[in-house]
Every structure is written in C-alpha cells, then in structure tokens.
Image 1 (tube, one colour):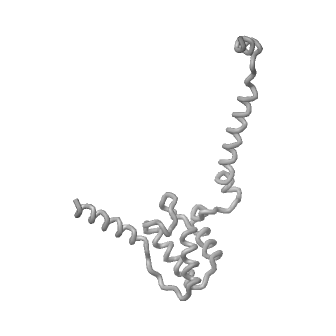
Image 2: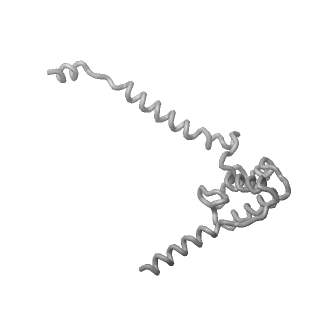
Image 3: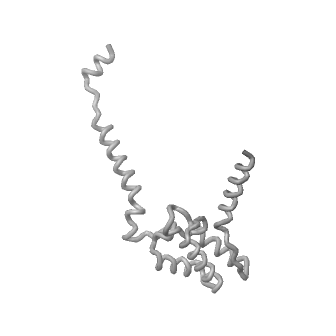
Length: 138
C-alpha cells in the first residue's frame, strides 16, 4: 500500500513539474514581465487555463514566443497586441469592449434585467382579493 501511495505521489509531483520551464532572463524585470504576461493570456486550446497553467503544446509555443519577445525588449502592451492580433480576443482574459464582444460583456446584465423584470411583473400582478382576506381572517 505504501508503494502505491509513493508511486501516485511521484506521478503527481512529476505532473506539477511538467509546466515549469526555465528561461534565462537578463533582468528581474524581464522575468517578472514574462510571468505577468503568461498569467494574463488564455490558452486557445484549453478550457479556462492560462498559458502558464496549461500543458498543451500550443501553450508551450506561446510561452516561448512571449519569452522571445520579452528578451528582445518588447513591452507588455506590444506583446499582448501581437498575441491578440494573431489569436484574436479569445487569448486575452480581459477582452476589450467592442461590438464583436458586446454579447460577452453585456449578456449577463441582460439576463439579470430579464429575471428582475419578470419577478417584478409577477409580484406586481398578485392581488389579494377581498373575499380571501375576509375568509382568511375568520
């Protein structure tokens, strides 16, 4: 039993190391910029994972692209614009508000308003009939 637990623990720990890549940066700021950017970009292939968290091959490629651009001195804004241009708004966790994204931004508000109006209409139409009030008191 101990061997089984040790084997499972080893496999889980190896899985955790699978995402970590070691890139050499010239400065601490570049490393911090790299970390910030890979935590802001969504994996286009995965379900709600950043490229930092994902094990997908595409995410590895995107991390390498980010590493190259950070090493070349590109700014965060330039790198995010490049990724957005190449992979669309989906790659950003905070997509810009523009007509193609209106549904994404305003659909939750529209659903909330529909529910609120429906509840208010149902409550507003409810009337207490005088007969029920009299019989209820007796």
